[in-house]
Image: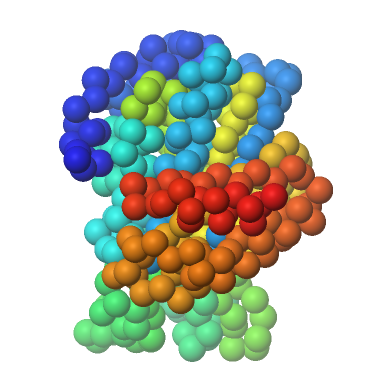
Length: 397
């Protein structure tokens, strides 16, 4: 059996300019990053503004387990399948964070024959968006420390600084640090720390911003500290928003790539759902809806977290109206919810599966309250038995 990377490396990719042309994206609207990656610039947004929207399909899942559910794989597979039956479809996904890529979670470009490519590029530095977000966030932190070093005219209390530096890597040694050591020339000593880039407010803001002007305003509204008198201090108060926006000039534009079968995929932004709203950018989704008849997107974690935030935050702010919700479930994960240890999930266990299926029911009911049709997708594995698949089928009926 081939591994994901062997499948990915064995695929002949089409030039991204061809994928763009089939979507109706013009040459001057594309910023190429080599042959297989590109950014779509503001010109496309302006030209397509009056185009009617396609249908929006959200992919979510049951509660995450160590067994894996496969939202991204299902999203990519759905995009490929709809293209196969002659529909003009596009998928809209988040970019992976380097920390989880090198951690237990691994990459976030799908799997098997439902992958987004070039997988290695996407999972590593891609088009540099994560680095730009890291730089913008840390620039604000540096300007804040410099403000206190240069006399602290706003009277910022170093004990009440809210913004932290960030790094797109799992590095627990940097969670809590002390900065400004080394005497008067090196700043004001204070406690600080690093968070992972995708957990930063800058990341969440990038994914909710409508355009560059909106992005700059939102950056200025970041609450960064309090004064000794208890008054709030915002990024705009230290005049950081302009420089931060400049660093995000390219990062604000969505990235265009493709699936193994050449289905177009827009990947942009990557906020965690347990920290922020857990969806790809508003700009990417809006653009995808203008470019295709069907846009298939996903939200992080289970439906009770990412999908709820998709509905309550992203859809409200961007005035999006999904036409369908797909809840991904696996036999393995439901057996895990039914009490089966991870090491034994390959063994048939109908009773544990029945016990764990209440989790699936809860997620379906959770999504039905939004008044949108709900479909359950069984992400099938080779160890699933017909008896087990029948349990899920009966549960859904």
